[in-house]
Length: 108
Image (cartoon, rainbow, N blue to C red):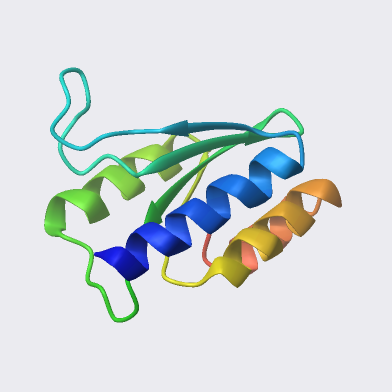
């Protein structure tokens, strides 16, 4: 869990330093659906949800369902255990290359 938190904090700081809005969802908190991704990032007016896992972490069935639901609405939703995915996501949004997100499996 400490590794996962470290990755999450790095992603949060990275986007905050790049003038993004970052919102942390707390699992189990009132109003937060089960399996909802950890972070909502709004960068260059593009929303993206990020579920952070520790290396080799596995998404639960409900997490997979929530990501699929978000993607079905045309919003980026990813699961990652790699800080570099945050950099790739920012680059894709910065370059308005959201097709790159699709190539990486980050459906929009």
